[in-house]
Length: 301
Image (cartoon, rainbow, N blue to C red; front, side, top):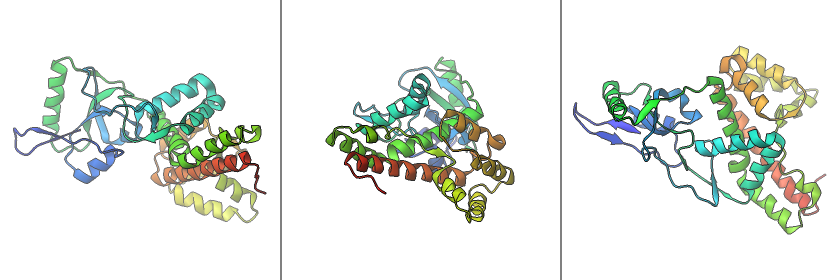
């Protein structure tokens, strides 16, 4: 990521992202950032302007992959792409379980492990020196190092962000509980009842909503919750309707629905996303703890 130095002819100052720091936090903290160089990621979308694909090897900034670990899909575009490939090839029932079982015997690493979606150079919106940034990009183009970058579909980018949140909650934030569940399965001979549960997916509506929905006095609390996490009236109305639907496991179709709701305003609401990440993390942690208990012969009443 580049920032122009002081003075008209000052050198470019490169600022490397610290693991697992995101572009948005650096832009807000430092200011004056003009260019981004590296793998594009859904979380960076709002900050990036015109992009060019980088063709020259070695220009993408990334760290070496660890064969015994896996990247956080919220920060590692390559890990997110790999997970999407598994879900596409295997389907959500088998593919999601495969991702969970793979993560249960590995450890999460932080920061980008490979270029993933492909290296790119991009203008950062609101940069202090757009003319200098443009000259730098033109110099890359003159050497044949860059070319047109395909603009991702906005709805797909939002759905990818939701998927990254789901996998981050299930594989990274809940990794300690997942590791304990896998250890219990091995210790007690992989009992079928416990084994069958480890790949379950969080429900939609989320568990706390289902609990309030089943409570005769929960309607007012549901309305309060909706107002807090979806201040936009149209997004809130969509969310309430979705909460009234029959329970189903989260899958790609659901993530696409949320990503497209009210022109993306619900998926773009930080309060909704933070709440949803918390729901998914709490649910998967409880699931893995239950797997460990059932594997050991204790089933809570």
